Length: 306
Image 1 (cartoon, helix red, strand yellow):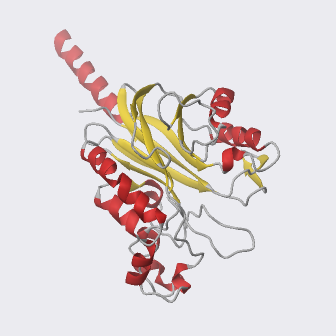
Image 2 (cartoon, rainbow, N blue to C red):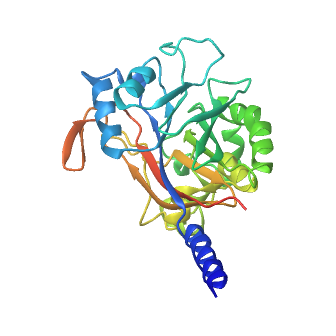
Image 3 (cartoon, helix red, strand yellow):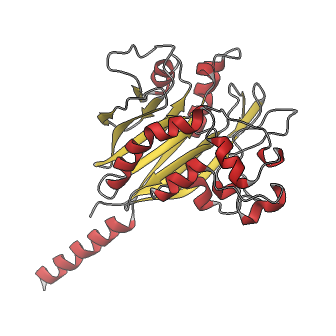
């Protein structure tokens, strides 16, 4: 009977562990020129991050400010750049911050717009990628360009953004194939709308157009999940805007956190945005906003690997 009792306790403990996954929070933010375009911008970025309190940050437009921000907040810091690049290099775009220990580097031939780092969370390895794609071609209201959906997709291929994505797509394909054993999280400033925001349910606000935007469709085909839209499937009630210029009609969701992995699940996602150099209120604290981009925060649950 004693042995049976012990076996029952072991089974209950094992099931309990399975039912209580490890939770962690990821933030992606283009801080704009190292957050240096307003007075005390870097300090304000630090204050905003402190209030959000993410476990991992995928940063864009780091431009020399990342190490100071990481030191002020106690994060491990990885600059996405060739080895031996000074951590305060003002020409380096992307970086990753983590409260958890780092694993191996994930280098690409295109570090200005894609790179990553393994992070060890709850004794499990996850591959994190920070990303930026060029804004061109850009139009504030693509639905008013007088083009069909097919013509918009061809127009999107005419400038830098599409070429950048094609350059890094082989890397994403390789890591997506391996995501059952090593989950991946990919986030940043993609400077493109999403096909999930331009579907049948949004035709009335997009001049009757349904546009399968090239980049987000390609990521979906790789099995990557748009964390915000997966949890807020209605783009009318939850547009998730991260780009909006004061006094202009140019609002779009162009900053994202995607993920893929059998033992990884997004359980909460929010977007935050105010206008550049206007106050943002977080946890009842008013902070002047140093960027022209909003940010995305997604909470994940990580289950025990099988």
